[in-house]
Image (tube, rainbow, N blue to C red):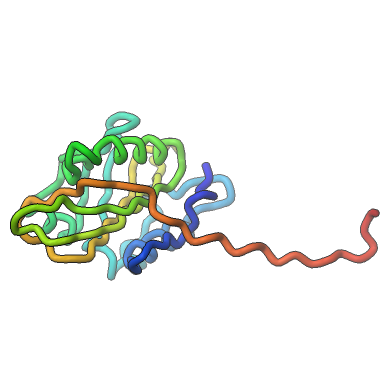
Length: 186
């Protein structure tokens, strides 16, 4: 249950401050060997990012239904998304990538994806970043997904779906500072 390949600050060509804020909060709740519990989330810490946040519940290893959703995400589709699968935000071409990411999240790994919206008439260029983070239930099993989706660009004609989902470039973890210990074994 590690996110060593997914550091707390995802990095892409465009800065996604809300994604970084939610990822930082999730990382701060982690203990050495345990993932955060759903009830450990503090909405006050993520107040600025709440319009971009959603909470989904796993119904199978590759499918999660949206339970709570911020209005910035609902604006993308032009409808209430509660009860819908997370894949409703994506076209057929990107659903396999989202389902694979959800499966990884179900194993305790955070996934960060760079998204590109479908092009079309009345639909200008739009990019986004999506981070999916595992949350545990009362029994300690991974039951929920904390997600944050921040977009850049105009929505245009709705509904607007994302056509591609690729792993986001990760910022390198800083190397630990090591010091020489004198008097140790040789």
